[in-house]
Image (cartoon, rainbow, N blue to C red; front, side):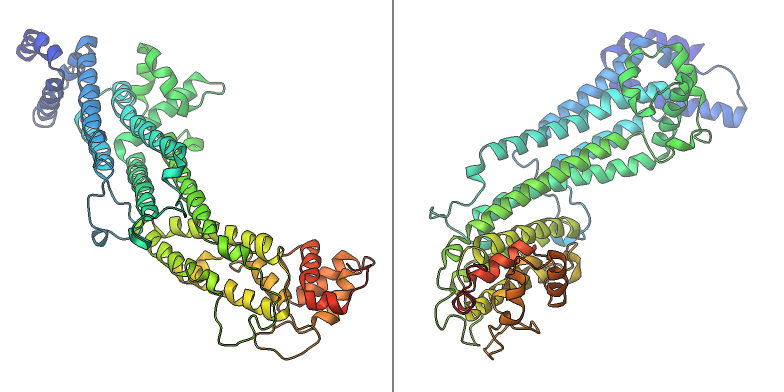
Amino acid sequence: PIIQHKLAHDRSDYISNGLVIAHVSRELSEFEHTLQDVYFFDGPSVLDAFLADSDIFSAWVNAERKSAIDSYMETIADPGAFKQLYEDEVLDRDDPKPTRIAQNVVMLISDIAERYAVVPSCMQQLQFLSTTQFPVVIALVEDVEGEIDEFSRISLAFIRDASSNVSGSGANSPFAAQLRRLASWYQTVWYVEEAARDWNDSTIYVDMWAAVCCHARALGGDADPRDWRDECDDWGEKDRKVLDDCVTLETNEEWLDGGIWERTIKTLGELKQRILELMSRAINKDTVGQLRAYRKKANWASEGVGADADVEVSIELSGLLPELSQLVSVLSELLPFSGSVYLLRSLAAELDMFLVDRVASAHQFNSSGGWQFAMDVSAISRVLHASAGGSALQGPSGQLLAKAMECARILSCSLDGEELPGNSDMTLSLSEWAPAILDAATDDKEAMLVLGKLGVKHLSIEQIRQLVKRRVDFAATFSSPEMF
């Protein structure tokens, strides 16, 4: 009675300063535990009665929400909100690196949960979660999405303008700075996502998940426990009884793999993937943009091109290869291994398509020019391959730039078995297998079986025929109208 009288006397103060209610609730919880553990008290709970006052509970929830949002808004407004807190050497590459705003979000959610953990009612805990914690994560998602949308809208500020005379190159280039900006968003979302995975497995949230599963079962029909947030504003005493009395998932095994943070984790994962895809598009466009001169190279069929065994790569690639190597290094600093592999696989696929469609299929070649092309493709492949330490970067084909490599094999294939530096390692000369491939009477499936034995497995039969026709030395020797 004394405590209840004191609480009633100070009620107006609590309502005007809701955060004090958290302190009072903790004190009441500790007091009641002492009575129960030491004096075996089994009477009614003062804390239950205190929080059953809707005005008191609402004041606490509203104060928590305002405090959390104010703290979040103050942090996100700072120009350094997405700045990484620790040096790269402090954390492992495959650990998320917290930014100021990511750490702020995680600490806010953790601190709020610690304060309302003393609340006996699971329904009230769920109302805290829905009203004070989820909005903070939602605000972060919306802010990052806004940054991404703005970034995409002013794409000219993102993609390198080859005609401009900007200062810096490689790791210090404006393009690298933009990649770092995107990576800071990725690390922010990743850090909060990993925290949400940990929360999903913690006792307080497991108990909440059990309660909403029981509640969904009580509703019957097609009720999905993941939809609880849509209903919680309308919960009444009947819902409270179901939620507060259920603390086990034993009868809800179909939902054991879910969790109260499941949809949040999914949303953050999708946002993280969106950032990766934006980075991928930018990297691909920037890299292909640096291949303009290479695409216009037109001396593949000239005498002497590629005939010197000491020549390594075309001079038109001299700028790209160091830039590509620097890109690989920058990505390894900015992203986890899986993220950089995703980006480099995408880049490899883009380069493979470019080399096939814009170079191999767009120019005339002799076998020496074909060998030069093969050296170029190998040089690009080596730079990409070194980034992932071997096979991790390889896609479903099992080889980087698989189609470009096969183009190089065909374009450098010996015309009739002559020995030239860098001839293709095909076991048959072009004059031995190409006429049959070009013959309209040849069955496509049989042709591909033969080509597969020669190491050509990823190009289509039409692509192969077009490449053979690109060999000017073959065309000069086999000029049958039926073939060409």
